[in-house]
Length: 437
Ligand code: DOR
Ligand code: ZN
Image (cartoon, rainbow, N blue to C red; front, side, top):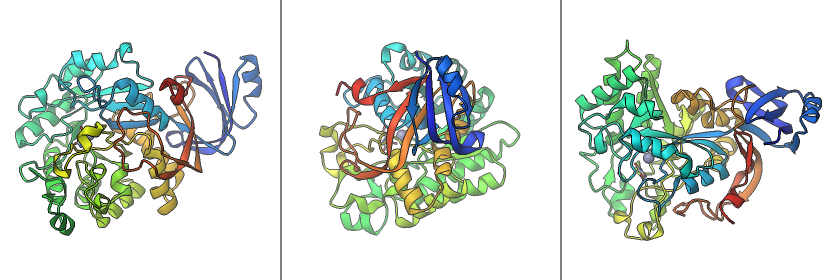
């Protein structure tokens, strides 16, 4: 592996407090030096480094997505770890955390290790999130210590909530003892059965059963109440794909009270509303559903003011024959790894004036903090050489996908933020080549 000198870019490294023109020298898969423009030229010559010109572009730590579905084991026709991580690399990600709703469910150290084996051919770092309960059935806790030892970075029954009060309290308590955050898919499934969109005037008009805002916020409030009884422990609640103003307010209040609660928001929830369903477009069906404009604007305020800790895609690939059915029968979810940066720049930066550095934080040091990923999310000397080079204003068209699935409402969209290079462990990834294109 040859050394690389990245010259002349605008380095945005929120964890290090840097937003300035800087050169970076990468060597042996690590950041060897960060310096003023030109300051590393001599060192780079000595090492026969390859030069990469980043003038006019942003250089940032590789993005971290703490919520993806890679579908292996068991559903490789939708996505494999290899294909999903290539899509991630194309979107500027160098670390993804894989949810356990695979087939079988990842509730064991064996599956957790299998997902990280070199045979999976991951293009970037894959960190498994293991099931909170056996088979994600919500009844018996899994072995958190063994799952952590096998590499799990959090536990969750994502796709389903941890519904019962007692089992959720036990999950938080065991997570605290072992040092794993509990990620909750906040949905009171007792009242969302058969629902396929947000509850309101539009669901009534379309003749579809709706999911209420309260079905999300009531679980977030319940979980926060449980957490409040564990103040003197390291119990950590993380709310997945938060989609409503009411749930966001609950998180904001809990944070103000000093509780260890964090949350993430998905790009589709800040970029779209339920109106995107239009004429029953199944590419606008996901769980939680697209919400109202009022909810969307509240999420954007939370992303701006620090209440939201991370942008996470909930990348949920499904095959065409699954998405091309009647609206109510199609599975929930859309792909998201390739459009996260573009949607963040378009909606948050260009339309709502959220500074670039805050957006980079929501994609790097924010998620790293949520899951205690000490090695990821910053480009200080000695860290892995995981980074992305992108042009924030240059538009590109989302025409093809590296994912095995194409279930995105954003295909055909023009978005800002072209990714020029994703570098993982000092290797410049070429997503087109690795996809065989
Ligand atoms: O839209 C979703 N898709 N929401 C979920 O909770 C699960 C996910 C999936 O696995 O497809
Ligand atoms: Zn999910």
